[in-house]
Length: 77
Image (tube, rainbow, N blue to C red):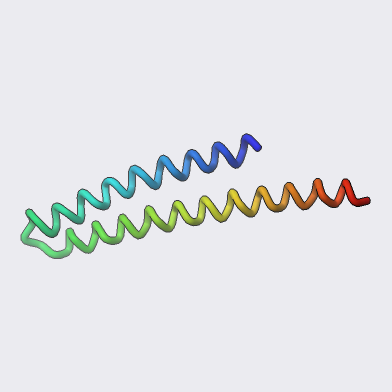
């Protein structure tokens, strides 16, 4: 149980940092900067943060399902 809790905390931490940086970059690109490419980079960072968080959640859920199915097989046999 500890391994996927650690992984969940790590993905939350990385996702939150990247989301904050992405939102700040997007706001800088849309409000302050003259270049529209900065806004695109901000959108990309936000999408990357969401992608990293979702992949981490999928990995944690699949690991838990695999461990629970192994325990279920041991009990049924």
